[in-house]
Image 1 (cartoon, rainbow, N blue to C red):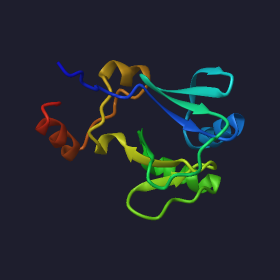
Image 2: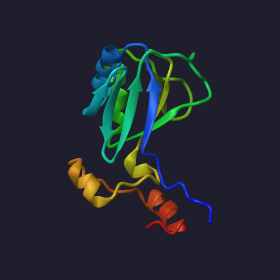
Image 3: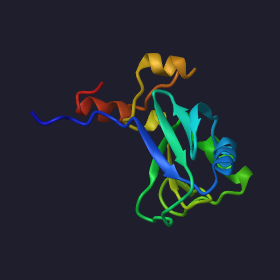
Image 4: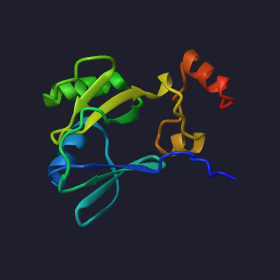
Length: 144
């Protein structure tokens, strides 16, 4: 039997400076810390996490990106403007952090990504729903 990948536990991004990266991301998103070790900081995303590690060893990459699901994409757009972070031109809401990591921001109610009700409740987000289109995409896969 071939094992099935069932999700992503975490994503790791390289940054040049941990303190600066926590300050940068803290201006854009509410951060909840999972922990810290030498050269890394771990930020909870409900039942998943983002690992920020320093120092950065790779150059910026135009092809790869991290998609982050948020409760309010327009609030992120406003936070980016407030912080003076330019939006990457093109489709959707994309930006680069100071180390060249490209982040794509999508809104929870508009995508197939789901959190279990108890995880949403634990995050204080129990009222989040899905658009008709997102529910239809999930249903088409037998996931709703």
